[in-house]
Structure formats: C-alpha cells, structure tokens
Image 1 (tube, one colour):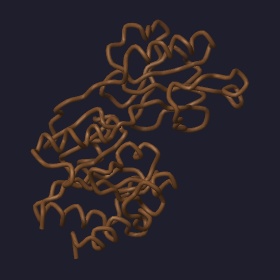
Image 2: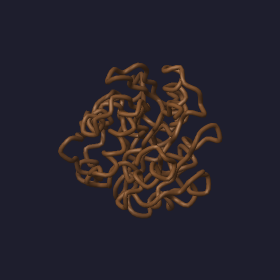
Image 3: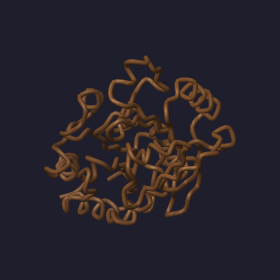
Length: 258
C-alpha cells in the first residue's frame, strides 16, 4: 500500500469537544497507521504550544498548528509565522476608534494581553489560558500577531455596524470574536514538502469552518458526520460522527486499518 500522510483536525474530529477526549477507536487508528509506516499529524487552529499539549496526549509528533502558519516535526518547531502585521495593526486602530475592547496573542504562549481590564469580567480565564492586563500595552510594538480577540457586548456589533477583519467570524465564547489564521492547506503542503511526499499522498480529516481551507482537490478530504454542511459539500467522503467512531469508520472504509 502506498504511504499516506494523515492530517487530523482536533476538536470534534479527532477528539470530542470540550472535554478533549480521544475515542479509543481513533487512538487505535493513529497507532495502527503509524505501525504500517504511514505519517500522522495534527492540523489545528490552536497555537503551536497548545497543539503540542494535545499532540503529546495523542502520541503524535508532527503538527500543523496556527491554522497552517506553523509546522512542528518530531516535536521540534520548524517554522512559525504570524498574521499579516499591517492588516492587524490597521484593524486594531479601527477598533480603537470605536472604543471596542480587544486582546492579542503576540507570542507562542497560552494566553493574551490587553489594556482593557474589563475583559477579565466579561471573558474569564480558564486553568491553562491567562489574560494579562497591561494598561500601557501598545499593539504598535508587536512584531507578530497570532490571534486577535474582539469583545462585543450584546447587540453592540450590530448597533455600531462594526466591520469584520475577515469574512468568517469565529465565536470564542459569549461576547468574543476570534480572528486567527485559516490556511491549514499551507501547513499541509509545507509538511508534505518537508518529508518529500506528493500532494496526492495526503489525507485530511475535519469538521469545522477553519477546515474549509484544508480541503483541496489535490488530496483526499474526509469530513466527519458532525461536520459543517459547507465542509461536507467539499468532502470526497463523509464518515460518521467523532463520537461514533468516525475516524475508524473512514479508515476501515478505505482499507487503511482492519
């Protein structure tokens, strides 16, 4: 059998959100695919350091993270780029003109920084993710933007007719919109090139809007049963839900595992 390179989105594809639990059947597939000599990687929108936490749990060492803007090979970060800096600065200036609070992730860490202390009340931290409030923080000094968080109170976005930074909004809890890279195919291609593999050898699994960019006619695209309709429409094959052995069902369908 020809060697394949399998790329798995995390949340609601390889693992069940929000618990982050990998079904036993999916973990079995990961180990069996590796045993047969195939390559396996994560392909996630999470920042690289967060993706590595999950990768360790899943026993995976290759990672496409940051929505395609970073690749990690055998646990070592090979490349990582931020979003378009000029676009980010222009958008933050725009938000400032409307007095809209924001926060940014400006380094490869689990957290964000903001000059707006009210964000802590609107959008609390959780155990591994922290918000740093620095009243003097100046986004103009940031060299790399990895994520931007925008905070709208109920109805404020519509009332003030706030423009979006990108065409697709990702809600990140109540009252928060997240902007992050959504170019997973870029990372997939870079990973394939790194290992000297052809594009037709790639197999990608996904479920969400940020997986739309990862589905390419150049490789095999598999959507979960719980995937967004738009993603299913682009898929070459639709498997069962994440929590209904979707990974195993697809791998058996194509004869990759027994």
